Length: 354
Ligand code: HEM
Figure 1 (cartoon, rainbow, N blue to C red):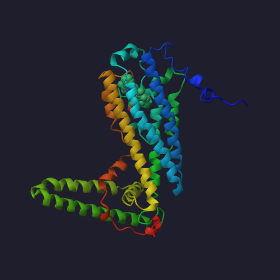
Figure 2 (cartoon, rainbow, N blue to C red; figure 1 turned 60 degrees about the vertical axis):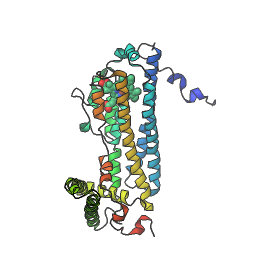
Figure 3 (cartoon, helix red, strand yellow; figure 1 turned 30 degrees about the vertical axis):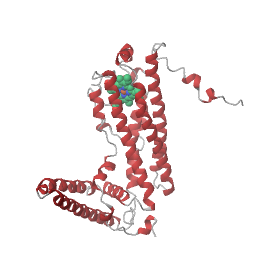
Figure 4 (cartoon, protein in one colour; figure 1 turned 90 degrees about the vertical axis):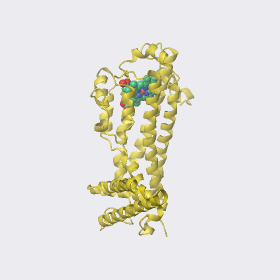
């Protein structure tokens, strides 16, 4: 067999023949527009493959401890790619508004709204159709189905297939639900009592911590602060109760597991799980930054015009910056306690401590 050359290995002749646009003769600005979009879509392809790798491991009935770094590694790669994508919008932004108008109309109704790969990323993470913003009464999947009718490529079928997969969110929550809490594992005799006991003790400490904070504020700023601050501190406690005392037992155990990992993160057995959670938080953060950066770039290039996909444009895009697929990972942060106020750790040996 002959040895491959660089351009054959990378299929460059085929790849570089795919930037001709609709009429085969794009202007230099349109070439710029096409290449920047294609570069994003290539990164999305890699993100999807990394997400599936991480999800497959996380979704196993048992994730051996030594495989947690593998999951962190692949999600970490997704984060670096997304950070790079956020910066990449600066390349798009070099397109002056008037120069875009030269070719914008011929795109209509094509739009990033039809980026089926970004939709797949969102679906794979666990964003639900009902939580999406609709435009013109239509949600993205429905839009892709209706505009794709005349296309030889069935993007909608791809989305339908992705919807059948286990999401990263579900896999993560199932894994969190298996966290050993005060030495007790899910399925152990008496596990529910141990978990509920931990939650009750933790909430007691949250209350005590709130009272200490209030005393400190009153001592520093005067008694007049009590009336203003006491309701806020009480609201914090109520939020913590709402979060941890949820009726669904599986959800309650997963949230207690999350809280346990975040609280006792120095324990050898919990150090990697804590890193995994942080990597998922960063992933969501990067996606939010991506949406925000895209919206600001769009505002700079087309102002407040409607989009080629028919949405209200920037107004619609700004609404999507509120999407959260992992709200619990953020909420738990409001309930964390200083180390010296944590409930005493039980059965330390289960966490790799002498
Ligand atoms: C001059 C450049 C760009 C403009 C003016 C622009 C404008 C818009 C507008 C107005 C929308 C809302 C849907 C619509 O009505 O069309 C949209 C959606 C979108 N655009 Fe862009 N865009 C640009 C570049 C990009 C690039 C480089 C990407 C990278 C892939 C991108 C990805 C997306 C995605 C994924 C959506 C769907 C967002 C969502 O529904 O959550 N856009 N774009």
